[in-house]
Amino acid sequence: MNPEISQLATAIDATWVMVSAILVIFMQAGFALLETGSTRMKNAGHVAGKTVLTFGICSLAFWALGFGLTFGDGNSFIGLSGFFFDGTEEQAAAAFSSLSFSTIPVGIKFLFQLGFVGVSLAIAWGGFAERAKLSVYFVFSVLFTILIYPVVGHWVWGGGWLAALGMQDFAGSTVVHLQGALAALAATILLKPRIGKYNKNGTSNLIPGHNQVYTVLGVIILWIGWFGFNAGSTLGSTSGFFGYVALTTNLAAAAGAVAALAISWIVMGKADIPSMLNGVLAALVAITASCAYVDPWAAVVIGAVSGILTFYTSIYFDRRGIDDPVFAFSVHGIAGIWGTLSTGLFATPELVEKVAVGSPGLFYGGGLHQLGVQALGLAGTIVYVLAVSFIVLGIMKAVMGLRVTEEEEVVGLDISEHGGYGYPELLHDSKKGHYEGGGASAISSHSVS
Image 1 (cartoon, rainbow, N blue to C red):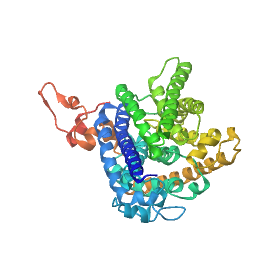
Image 2: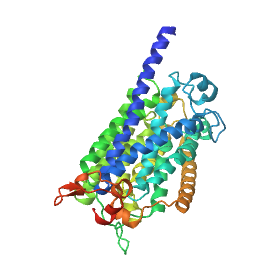
Image 3: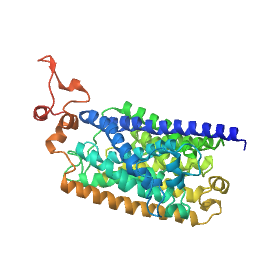
Image 4: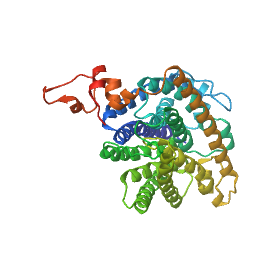
């Protein structure tokens, strides 16, 4: 290829991936709105604010160690080079052979991958919502970014043992979403249910989120951000393949929305909006693994099945005493498992050849081989992430505690952790004509549900 044309192609590809990185990082806004809207007013400021805090911590930890552990040259288990990333192509050539298939600048690759680990961490926080101490977010952000996420990331994307077997996870149903969901599940179990969630006989009480408009807007932002998430994972635009990936991504999301709303209407007698929103997200999670491997009709099937699965599993886990305020494990975990397995069923020979990873699926003459690889990858991920999450959080629980006091939980984390409400009108004393201060005195004088 003419050197000038080659340079132009690289510049165009780099621009697309930079835009994709921005879209993925902007998904933090979607998670902030989704989680805030799905929880109670007394915790709104805390839930939204910790999104910024934890992404900042994650960014520093990923720069220092996480990027090298995930993509650095090492062994089949973990990367052992490229720490304290300096952004130079010299370091990339010496330490990141797993990323050498793309010619775009390594600094852009770093930002793109940072967005992914930030999303995985944001998913994990769903299991902590409305009852975890602020200090827990500081510590677990670091530990997740350097002990949990990089290991499976290296296995699949960094040249590890699952990469050698040909595991197909194009943009992270397992690497990103399942890991975050498993950490959320561990946190949910160790933190135990929110006050008032369950009755003495084990029946569940509905604790509705305070702002459904926020949740809708959050899902729309995430839907848009997912085009960077999936289509950006082509790490280029000049081939045009990113458009195909965007197509399958959108079809799955649309099918998930319709299927989830329909099943809620059939089962509950009402068209439930939160169920529809969870259906969109579950479908996007599932298609994330398979978006580059499947035909459009299969994307519709994958999305629709995801929407139905997340509806039923959300009900099931709630009845089993697992208080997951944003249904993180159902939406990102169960759908992540289904999406990862789906490539072993629907991956076409032509698309597998194009991506050059793994083998065709069962329905396209590939037999059980790819399905077995996908299942093995899931098993390894579930065992590792759950084990390490329980160990890390268990130690944190013993050493520093995970949960706020009952009094602090009742008054809300806005007051108990930050000294002021996300909605300050709640503190307004109409008789005195001014706003009262937060702090310890507010914990005993205010109780807002």
